[in-house]
Length: 212
Image (tube, rainbow, N blue to C red; front, side):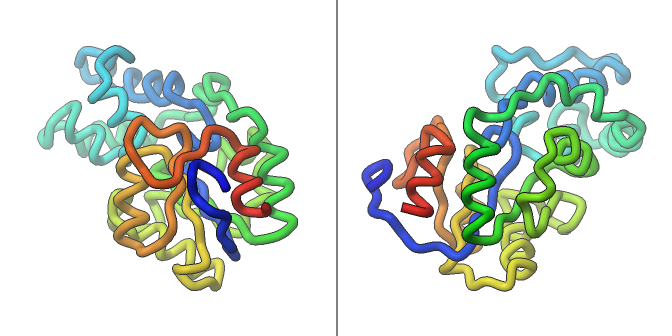
């Protein structure tokens, strides 16, 4: 039993990226603050939890709409497309035990990523040599509606060739929780700041829950 929940049998696991695979708040804030500075706007401070959480969890169109307004969002997205995210990757720290957990899990069942990241995701996976663990990767660029909508989870499940009931989604945000609920799949919250039936504090705990 993990987090007060009995073990369950799953045939696949879908991972969120930021906050689950990586501690990446510094990287995300640095990225968006580069954009804000270019447009003469005040940077987001980590102490501004609402805006910092938005930068961490939401897709870029929503973040930039909130931070710069509708009149500057499209221009900001165009500028963002010119930024090489690789300069921010050194600010990302893999969660402890991530590689070991992915190696063990991927030996037994297919894994996927469903993230509100867009074009930066391939560089992140390549830098940390994680591609070999995942059968498919779904980003905000693959769907019309990012999380909290269920679209990317449903696409990942389809690509894995599994039924919704056989899949566990591991996320860390309310966006992730809502997406899982709408997709009708099991959800485990990683180090959550909100109440949820199943919470996990480490990747070792996740591995124990899935593999027993």
